[in-house]
Length: 112
Length: 111
Image (cartoon, rainbow over all chains, first blue to last red; front, side, top):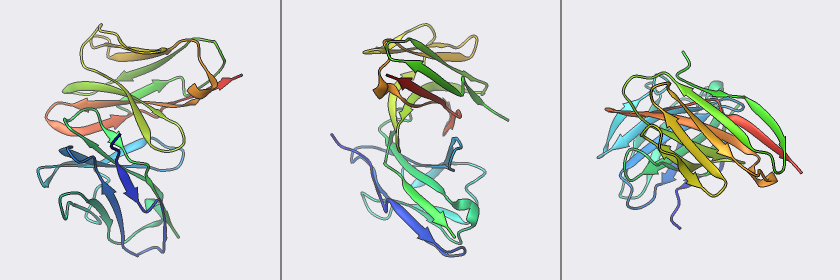
């Protein structure tokens, strides 16, 4: 069964460094999402992406965040200058329609 | 403000019990409500509900939506220890490709 994959599974970085989180969505899916979940807190929507552009973004998704679909398969989330409060689990999800989303296993980001 | 509220926050039951998890929402342009099960990491999809009063069922799990009262319930009958997880509710909006999640209900099923 096809699934969403994410790399790396864990990332430790120093405050102020740039990180790129990578996702490979399910191949026939058209809608892509990034979410984050701070430890012990709710899943929070960051951004949605369709037709090679951002369709929605949350208040969290400020100028330090960006997303790209550099080729036909990868979908990346870049955090330009990480802060301590960016430490969280980051989930990528994809869907055929704007409904049933399939989540990847997540990248646990720790900013020191 | 909280747009999606789940209750209870946590629940401990014994195998064989039936549980009902609640999700209420307050959003404009409601399109759909989704239930997910989150065990160790990624949420896995359970149900999507768009119409009131139509029960969705999968094995021992079932769910229904009330668009007038703005809530949904997820029922699990004959619970098993493998049902132990956090159950998440999310609401999707028309015209906005974004979803709001609740805080989840942590279910612990004891042998």
